Length: 391
Ligand SMILES: [Zn+2]
Image 1 (tube, rainbow, N blue to C red):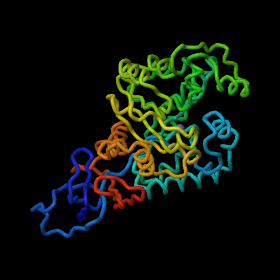
Image 2: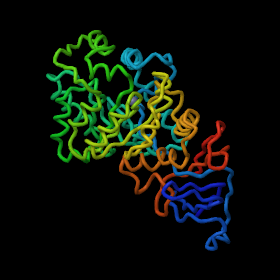
Image 3: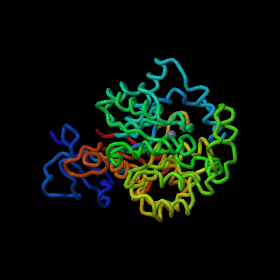
Image 4: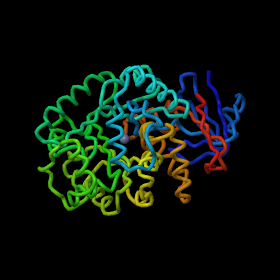
């Protein structure tokens, strides 16, 4: 049984949008064809016509399911360090409550047309939710260790946690430049085939991170003092955090830098020169929630590395919805083209997660999910645009 759908535009992402195009999908969600309006081979078929734009399912490349129970708990615009302190203080909760919130977050993403997720985990608690979900999850097991003497033990524990996700795609990753020491990067280099271990690193989410790396000053000094962590070993690097850690990565290491709120042109040039396989993940709604600021988007338009989108967690976002991230970007940067940003929301994320054989674009043989964006204005979003998964 094949269902045929048409809309004002079919947006394959891998090809130009098709005005009044038609798409055929079998009962397993596999695309059997994408057609021009009036194509002869389907002239006798029943076609369900929609208003709006049909796109592939969205890929959310940055989420923390584990923090879903913290929805609405934190004030907006406090800045990153007070936000981290609040998460540390309040993340512990009753296991049932955490699991229920994760399941509800998973359902919310499905309703919002998200089909695959890059999810950060510090614990094994999300495993069952992921096993039961119809969404694809890649779990990034996150390492936090700023103390060199503890690095070996923390890395070993991280690998064990990664193994406990067996059967589910997972990899081990440093949390952020301000929360891991150089030794962690040394252990990453020693992994068997590090190029198959996807990294997802929080990057320059706050100017304080740059202050720490450039001058060993700023709020992170107090942050570690309050935690009773001695960072006497750490030396000012006289350059931004990203420029310090990129040379520590294995060659050709796939790495996704997440947030990039305070990344500047020099950083991007540096990354272009030194790193072979970088993806930039933007989480605009979380950036507005925490720092009330957005990355310098235009800098990322003029470089070669792909861009993806993430929601971050419900601790720093009112919803888990990639369309909502797109709406924020287009509202703040009206010159952005939907042809570009839809690629960020779909195919680029699928490529980073290594699942583009199935997800990310409307092509024959793929099972990417099918979203209808309603209340669009031709090929543009409007502030009232909504998303509904068609299958
Ligand atoms: Zn995050």
